Length: 252
Image (cartoon, rainbow, N blue to C red; front, side, top):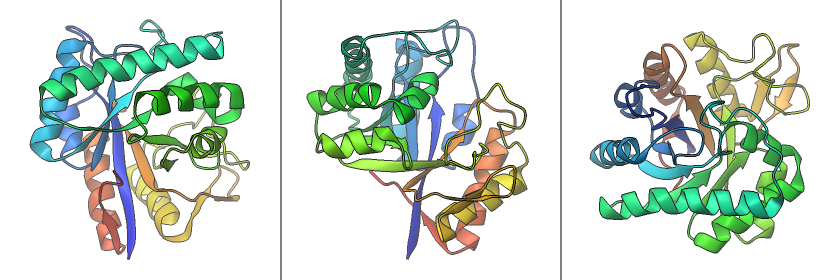
């Protein structure tokens, strides 16, 4: 039986400024990566998002990032590995406190944006993140880009890892994600999202912009909740994967 987890990044609103339509997207996914106040989110948003996930039966995970609210965590910040470890640990703890107050178990950790990309390529950063997660709880699953340094660091730290792929991002032939500053980094068309998701879930491959087959072994598929039309794409992914014989269920 083919199975895949479908996750989204969420809880990224801040004060009166909304980001994405979490309520409309979360009904279609099986796990949620909730911003912890580093790149986005605030205590009220975190609590509201955790409550929403609890009501829907969606697995809750922490989504820490570089401390960069102005840049939405999409800028690399020069930090020592020890600083990164502390920043990630602190953000996990913030969400854990709210989840515990709401009677929700924290299941996983997926870092955000530039920190995610830096950890995919730089082992020192990947190891700092793995240490933070292991130091907090070895029961947490560490999510990382399939085939990346972060997955290797998590395994070396004795953590359970989830290899992540993307339904709405283009891949480069080497398996990295196309830089968001480049044209066509995002896949907006729902049919193309679905085709990529089915290819990854059933065949273990994605196609680069040059139509190169990129091997991608994944446990979970991400759909970004802050892109236009995310809810409609999430619904199509959930229904289309099921029609292709793929069971969508939480990995956690």
